[in-house]
Structures are given as structure tokens and as C-alpha cells.
Length: 364
Image (cartoon, rainbow, N blue to C red; front, side, top):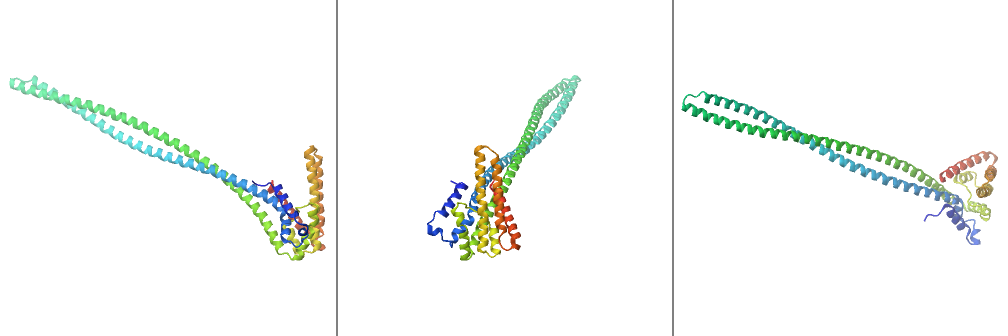
């Protein structure tokens, strides 16, 4: 289970203070100094890591939704491909049906012509019979008439078959046309499903992209804090024993009065190093942030009182206390180094304040 930032901060302060009396006065302890100087980064780091974890979880959820949308689009494309294949088959079937109808219609025309010819033959045979003058002529004419009537009957039967076939072919064309219309409708529906799935996927990808931006920003905050901690640890590692002693001794009062952590950042430490890290400058810097911490604690009490009583004027008192703390800190920082370095100290302090404001913004 993730510890809350407050709990983590308290645990680290307890770890610093809950040591034997002899160890507490070991001002040459580099590890203790590194912990003191980075203690103010631990709560922001825990918050930033929690924000990063939440952002990564949101990104994972967004990617899962995106992947589902991609799967639905893939399925829609499969359905569209099948519908398009069915449409091709339906069109081929229509072409075949129309071809069969053309042949059937031609057969009807041919059968009708055959019936006409057969009827002409029957008429001619009948006329020959009517004009016969001898028994032999009558017999021959009768046989010819019988043959013509038989041929006419056969032609009429074939015509009937061809007409029926043509009707069936025409019906097959109607059915094939209906199948083409249905296949075209299926393709249209499938295309609409693909378009909708593409829209959903695009929206899901946009959410993924936005979530990735949040993750990148959260990771950048974590990286910045880690870089600050590692830079501070490296800074302490490069200090001389006397400088470690001076720093640890300067924090003794803050430890005794429960003012840790002090918001001393790497920029200020580097500025102190540029000035030679005199005991006086180290003590001035520590005193400045101790003073600010005292007023910040007073401000917190006023804010708590405002919340418990509902009286907003306590918020104003908290603001004044906070402003007083900043003012006191700047007064101490302004005394660091020679007079010609005072403006540089103010600039460094302002830069540190800007970094702390950015850090505070990242917490929110």
C-alpha cells in the first residue's frame, strides 16, 4: 500500500532524529546531511510518483479502450470485405441470369417463327388437299397435311416450353437484381460500421495521446525531483569534512525545534559554494530558511483555525505570516557574502522560489 506523503515525511524526520545522542552530534556524518538537505524533496517525490502511477494507470486504461476500438474496426473491416465479396458474386449471378434470359428470349422468337412456318405448311397442305382431283392426289395431300399438322403441334409445344423458360429466366433476373440490391445495402451498412469504428478509434487514440502527454509531464516532474536529490547527494559527497561539519551544525537548531524539512535547494547550495562556503554564509542560509519555516508553521495554524471555525480572516493572517516568512528568509539571504554579492543572492533566492512554486504547482 502506498504511504501518504505526510506519513513518508514524518517517517523520514523520525529516522533523522531517533538516533543515539552521540550519533546526533556527529556533525561529520555525510549521510545525515544528505538526508537533511533532500528531506524537503521526499514528500514532493512521493506525490509526483503517485501522480505518475495514476497517469500511467489512466494511460493503460486508455490504451485498453483504444485496443478494443481497434479490434472492433478490424472486425468491421472483415464484415465489409465479406459484404463486398457477396456483392461481386451477386453481380456475377445477375450477369449470368441476364445472359440466360437473352438466350431464352431468342429461343421464344425462334419458336414463334417455327410455329408461323408450320402454320404456313399446314395451310399449303390443306390447299393441296382441297385441290386434289384424283384419289392418288388426295391421299398424298392428306399425308402431307397430317405431317404438317404434326410439325405444327411440335412447334407449338416447343414454343410453350420456350415461353416458360423465358418466364423463368426473367424471374431469375428479378431475383438476381434483388440480391444485388441486398448486397449493395449490406456493403453500405458495413461501410457505415467501418466509418463509425474509425471515428471511435480516432477518439480513443486521441485520449491515449492526451494520457501520454500527462504521463510524460508527470515523469518529467519525477525526473526533475530525482535529479535535484541526486545532485544534492553528489554535492554533499564533494564537500570537505569541515564543510559537512558546518552544514550539520547549522541544522542542529532546526532539528531541535522540529523545523525540518527546510526548503533549501541545489541552486542555493551551488551559490554558497561559489562564495566559498564560509561558516557564516552557511549559517545565514540555514537561519533564513529556519525563519521562513517558523512563519510557515504559524501560517498553517492560522489556516487550520480558519477551516475549523469558518472565519476567513484567519486566512488573511496566514497570508501575512507566510509573507513575513519569505521576507525574513530574504533578509538573511541578502546578508550572504560581500556586499557586491547581495544581488546575486537575491537572484538565486528568487530562482529557488520559482522552482518551489513550480514544485508546488506540480503537487496540485
